[in-house]
Length: 428
Image (cartoon, rainbow, N blue to C red; front, side, top):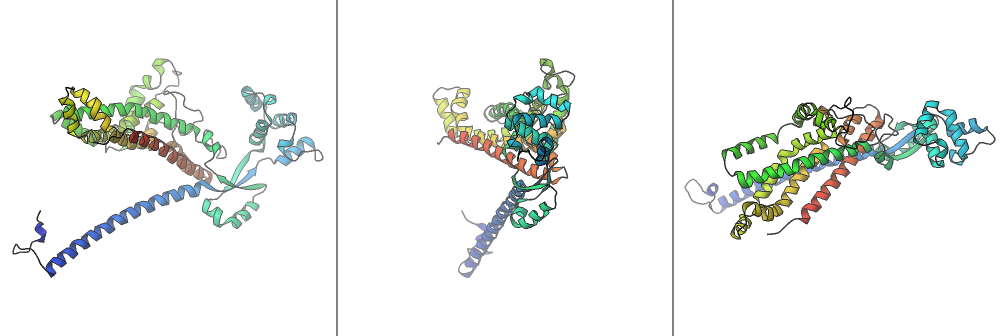
């Protein structure tokens, strides 16, 4: 094919020096665009590294702990100076129970006994109760990872200025953090309830949007053709994909929380107390996020179905298969890898959404794990938002640790979907 830009004014092609200058200009233009693209890639990598640096920097570091009551003082008070054991662990079981009863209120003792009698608890459980209920260690000061590495002498000096403090290097992403519910005290706060809520909401969004989205894609691509109705539907789907997520939150509030409150709260099934049911449940959140990711799934599923060669369809028709038999046996199996790619992107967006859930009324503080679609809930993004809005530095560390948990959960879900996609990938 002739390049019109290569021709000179008289219609001939340049030769000699003119040709060399033209070639040099084209190579320079290509080099400029290569540099631009490389710069864009570098900026993206730098931004990602800056994000990871900030998260990791806040997730580790030294912590100065300060006890409300020193264990040694507690032991001296109970035993006297002469006969006091060196640590709480060394005290006999009966003395641990006696120290607990002497230093907590009667109401708190009854509340603990309702779960399990103090006399029936193990030594480790009694030591933990003494620590949580009487000693009550609290975080007096925190430092980031970089500060802990490069300013350790200054940190040790600062810790010495805090009475009865103990310096400890802390990994904020620990087993207790993952297994504990939310708490107003950063020493005991965790993300268990938020993790369960995120999984519940994402699972319901997946069940709602994937079958509906794939079905709509099959109709539009295989049956709708170029009809006027199909074009109108396609245009609206493309527009819905660009609607801000908070608009979906308003839609979910109006439809699922208010209009269908009896359904989404479980009141019509009699599974919750009618006096507390208000529709702000896991089911409402899942259906709202399902609507949010539905256009993305439809668009990606259509592209995947469109990429299947027509020769496979014609071969099916040639063997006497009906249109649906051809779609089920040939089109869908070959389109699954592309459909799964769209599902991965859509579910990842649903897992990280915050704005629609805030509008719906997700709980910012909840300590009860959701155990059904009709439960109140919170999610990891909501938890992170709630912690980052607090001024105390301890909650900033907790927010960074929750971000790490969210990223790991997201990568695990994506890895599972990618493995399934590769398993069903077909070559043709």
